[in-house]
Amino acid sequence: MNNRIPVFVAGLVGTAGVALSAAASHGGGPFTATAASFMLMHAPVLLAIGLLTANRTLHVASLILIAGLVLFCGDLLMRDFAGARLFPFAAPTGGTLLMTGWLAIALAALRPAKAAE
Image 1: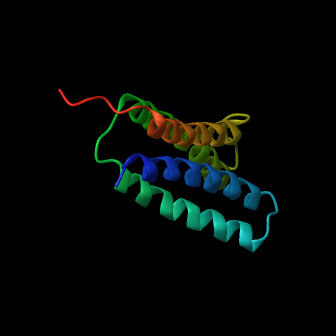
Image 2 (image 1 turned 135 degrees about the vertical axis):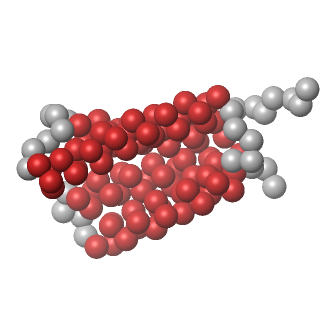
């Protein structure tokens, strides 16, 4: 099996899961939230299956995802526990970075593999 396919699909499913979670938090129905949960539950599984070998693009994508998580989740937690935002537009910026990271994972799957030395 070509391990690029699960990585590519994980990137797309992760992107959709983040976007649907944002939609659900802005008044989306229970189906939107359920779909987002399922996508986000399955994206890491697909990614794990596909990551038999790593490349530079995947490494960069993981750093983008980490930054996105810090901003997005940090802002949500600050709102709950401190009653204030991390900073203006932290959550949307984090969400955008999460989507960018997942798209970078998808792009990494399309890069040609290097020949074994």
